[in-house]
Length: 343
Image 1 (cartoon, rainbow, N blue to C red):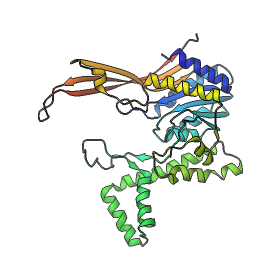
Image 2 (image 1 turned 30 degrees about the vertical axis):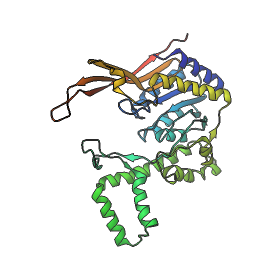
Image 3 (image 1 turned 180 degrees about the horizontal axis):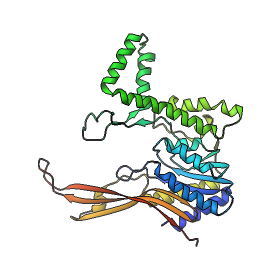
Image 4 (image 1 turned 90 degrees about the vertical axis):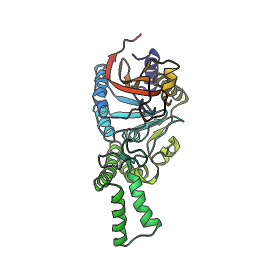
């Protein structure tokens, strides 16, 4: 159930902004409590938007957003759904809005960014059945391929090494395809084209004047290619320099946004590593930990998905060093939505 604190803050921010507010938070913790933006969230956003529409006119919707990103198709679907209910849409970024979350921000009429606010490049990583195995741990999940890593290899050969003749370029591609399956390389190309298309379409939703529209290709180039490193962090000053419609909040709003973030940080243990021994202690038995890993909250309504983790000391298997080891079992508890009565 939502805390009364978060509901009070949502209402206060709504009054300050004169807009309806929806908060969307996904966990930035490492496994097993990590979460990414995924398409299953769209169905639950629809519930919140319908709930807002039942209250009357929805002239403006703000989205409080905290996420490290996820499925690159989610932003396009989510932004279009929100715009079905309002003509004016803003994204509020108190802290992290990376990768796919940055794409969501591109679709907003304005991006309200606090001093700790961070956007990031939008170059995706590709996971396919044809990705290469982990070089050191074959049993680990296959290595994701960064779209810009492949482009960087080709650019290195052409621009730095100076390979320009076709025969050497063909040999270079043959060497690349020895390490990465050609179908995975094809997926890299398609992802590169898709991310540019999505970014352009999201920006075009609100950059409709000729002077604004002319800025779109450069913004897409910068965010998709020219920052060179997926974990590069874009401050609000740089976001404005890139040509995005950035607004700095007033001191009062800045304080409220950060307070709401801290409320979710406490509830979800955002930013904290998972140490099973902390929960297990000296006990020889079993410990269970359950935390929300993603949530949507608006005034009077909350949806969340939780993960339940069971921790147990077990004997070492044959062939392993003697002594107890830690076994972890994970269970995702499906999305739940509950109405919240006003106090």
